[in-house]
Image (tube, rainbow, N blue to C red; front, side):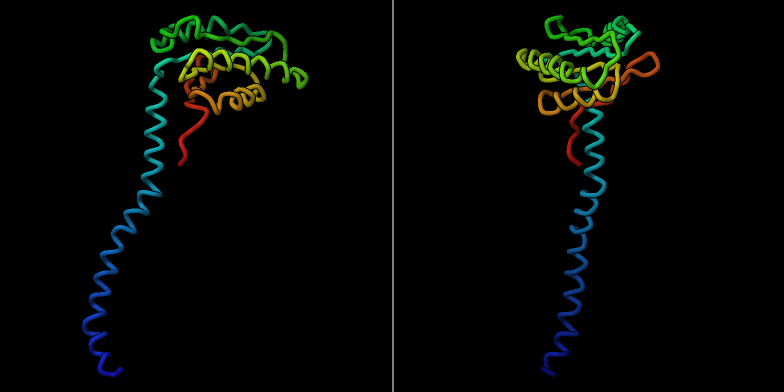
Length: 173
């Protein structure tokens, strides 16, 4: 054993050090890709998805604000966006309520949302552009209905205009 000690310390130790340093490179590279690269790819994916209207898009206008008629405002927004204005009328759906929603109305509202979702699916749409103005509970119903179907882009009503918030279902990070 004493005769192996000089061989171990003189030859194997430097070789082990070099191999350890060389193996650290792919380890750090993988760590960087997992921690930073994946987030960057997810952000790039989100930017790209928000810009593309889809091969066969549909438009779903949801106006659930009582005492406000924002249908004309929605139509103006759609007319100002060429990718949305090009959607034909047979793939345009709307849901409107003039009265204030209550918990008792959610079952009927869910049925209406489900019917619109089924019409959109029957039309073979790959992307749904949903312009939404209303309470959060109804937004949750819409998100639940469209989360497992075609890609659903949400446009939130904010200060008299609509803002694209991206898809309901995001890529996994």
